[in-house]
Length: 390
View 1 (cartoon, rainbow, N blue to C red):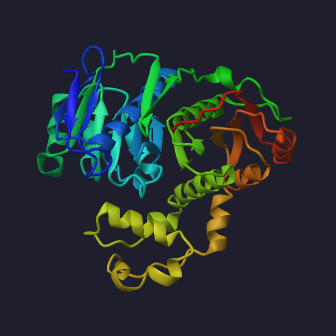
View 2: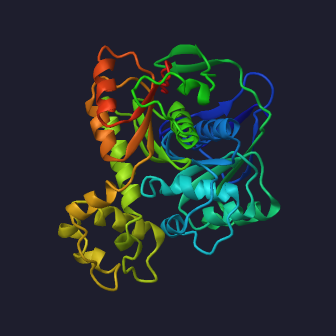
């Protein structure tokens, strides 16, 4: 089969719609559901990301995609007790792939609502069990165990989208897309991202531990499949804040940093022990936590419908308490898909615990950016390669 007809394109008025391949057969098999145009954009971009992460680091990888950018991405390192509580995985058996998806989903649970999942390895029952209670549109993986497929097919009243992709498929090295009736053509971005791209350390501090190299690789590969401009914060093998599609670099850094801050604050003991009623679902909890750790808590959380979520109204987590908790974190890695034009990006990154940075370099103000890194003893590498993705 070399083409698959779809219900419609990005919007219902955009018909007809299909995906197809000029030569040979499509490398995908729809095992369940009826994926749409945007589903396949997320699926194919996400699968490239996790395949590349797995190849670069050698550990199963997962990503949570929304609107053609990752909300989270991670490799399958074991979860801590705090992470298990954050990600609703307490007392669940966790394979490395299940850990990878729990981390990817947990980077930004509000944005991951209704995500498309991409997995680097065969989906096992442990991973399917993590996916089962989450609100999600579908999943793509090289294959599925019988037990995993049975679990996934039961989602959304039997309509959950499950796609299998041929792991041996190799796309041609030229890509095309049409805009306004005009065809654009370019070579595929086949840049290999590994520790070699981190060798040009330009700061006074040149101590880049292996864990930071791993996290910078996670950040850079995530950015390779994120709509530009983009910045990614990562720690312990997972993205914790992705700022996508911003016109200004500093806005990328602020957006991704605020998401990283929220990830930190979800670990605060008060947040972990919020007095939710037993029948409150995950999505409602995620939204309430997002409000609770924001400056709007005083105004809305204990009014109206919000009050119905709790057995008692939670105490205030003040701005000072939040700040004190966040500054306790360090060792965060940050990647940028293009150069930082000003040192203000470094100032903002430092507020979210950034100790290691990888960016292309090449700004006329590189000296200012390097000086700002030296001010905070941050290690920065120039990769020499831009990672724009559109």
